[in-house]
Image (cartoon, rainbow, N blue to C red; front, side, top):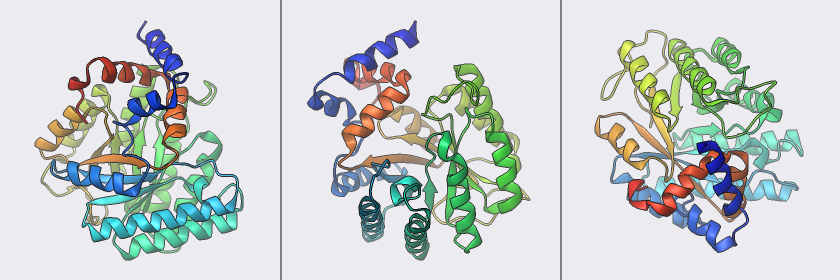
Amino acid sequence: MVGLFSRMVVGITVRMPRWFVGWVSRRYVAGPTLADATKVMQRLSKEGSCFTIDVLGEEITTMDEATFFLEEYKRVITVITENKLDANLSIKPTAFGLLLDSEKGMENIEALVTMANNHDMFVRLDMEDHRVTDDTIQVMLDMHEKGLTNVGVVLQARLFRTIDDIKSIAQKLGPNADYRICKGIYLEPSEISHTDRQPIIKATNACIDEMLDAGAYVGIASHDHPVINHALEALSSRGMGPNGLDPRTNSGKERIGKGPGYEFQMLLGVRGPLRRKLRAKGHPTRVYIPYGEKWYEYSIRRLKENPTIGTQVAKAFMMPWTNRP
């Protein structure tokens, strides 16, 4: 019943005027400009949060667009550095031209990762749908082979393959493995992924355990209480937790701007009270900050690809006081 209501809300929202979609998305997107994103980060910094910045737009059609993203992310690095913000980068390899010209796309990514590395800044490769899973993982491995270890990847727990990917990456990178694990926004085919809530939650929890036991750094990107509760128990059972060192003997060195082997990550505008509660208990929390001129396309895409967001949209509209960003 909840799923039907959520899909109905999404169906209505995507047909509404652009201004209405903008009103809905303003709590989830910082705005069209880097200045907007900077203001949001400065405000939320007072709560002790750190950030990862995403310049919206990935399905490019020309390499000129790829150049735009490279230059814009360079601006992001400069602004983060000048404003002394506790932030890193989230990038989509396809936005840098990986599918249009793989060689030039890799050059663009390497140029950005090198600049970030020179500023002790981490770069997260966002995961798109299953068509580019192998390519995205390979980009990370290639960067590490070049000595650029300030790169990690996002894995989607809903995919059947993800546990094997975790093990494979751990074998190749050892303690340098750095993941963001999420259930996955893309509604993948049932032949290759879990499609129901409980199996997805169970798979996400299993991925968290596998990553922690491998000594990896784990960004736990979830708003689901069953996942967060499991993560808290998993951390505690391994002697990990707030305001402490990473006690795992197989973990890597302490990472600049990172937590003690883990952090919780949440989208801007989603479950703000829960994020603040985790932060108040000492857990490192990171907020995903998207911005850019493609805010409308991003908002519509997220709604269409995951209709369950509809319940959050309805709640934000009818009871905005319950979910302060």
